[in-house]
Length: 493
Image (cartoon, rainbow, N blue to C red; front, side, top):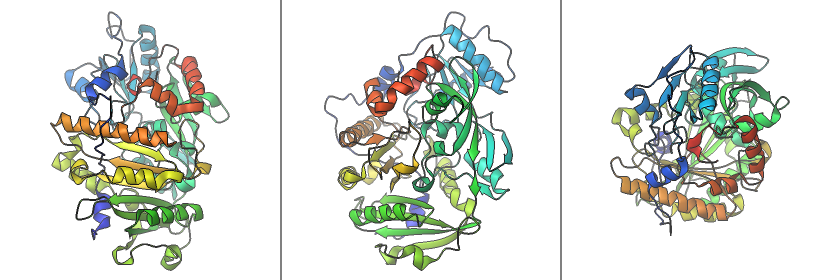
């Protein structure tokens, strides 16, 4: 067994299976073409744009940057990039694009992996300039869509408060994660990030600036949260806050048997004895992915009692010889991936392909499904900075209609987050085909994908993915984006 799970925890994201897909064209470029079906701007393009507070960029550097994302597999070159100086700029340009039938793709930090925030020949709207953070008031804070979660956390911690749910990587934009759901180790108690937002400010595909919430334009509120940008562009959000701990007790508990690891994870989510629960799967010295590390965190005062190790660990069946336990500053815990990310950027790994696989497994068959994927993994398919996550959620605290989950009280997130080899399209295509094969196996068992990764999807797959929620999404699309210009990179409509 590897003796340093903490060092492995800090390694960021990679992995894949190697199964073939019968009758599936694994070419990323072929799928990108099928999913995009791009329209071209009308004659004149962006020659007669109304006055703006910000910039409309058409230079090669800006267009090249907007045709890339964190995945580095799909490349769609827009005709222009809006760097807004105000929310009004977003309104003006969406109205312009609706009139001229130009597709529009909102882009936050560019952390998509499969062209989701790209558009061929259209307009990319960068939301990063919309990064204001308002005052904390009555247990909430209103922020711009481009604000990064790390900056939001630092701001609210000055008041002893914190957003209740974080993704593992903090340098994502608020608007970006709210568009997909936003899952993390706190989700088993607090729900997704989309469940903790109380109001959204959005620009619809018709170019209307609207505030929506559970009691005001509720259909739009439900269509935007985890709606993958299909009906409106998030430009601002009001977030619920909770009392923040000063320090946390951080445990990493190794297991040799997958079944015991899964059972203890599920027990912890049911008992809620920890504020944060995630799990990692690591390769042993032979390259087999059968080392399991349960990562659990208990918050200290003032948000919780002083952590008691004996009480917290009672009854858990981990291998005590390999466990670690540390007391960390709260923000240091939240931002624990920052050193690894900096190291990857320094080594150039950040610019390698990232053919991620993110699946939601029903607990009724989680061991079988997870074993099937994990048993096929080899370190060469992971990459030097890859990690595999496997941990449970709870359906009863997940209330976002478009964040689709298995019909199971305790779904598990399996995130195979790999770094692929650069300049090796054949290997990347093989990993994409493996993603599709793994998805089909999980889908047939009642599972879903968490749509932040790189799984080739057709429109029929999206209808199946959304299931009973698809008619409501389609109706909202017709109402709020009647010209169908928003987020073409998702390939849903």
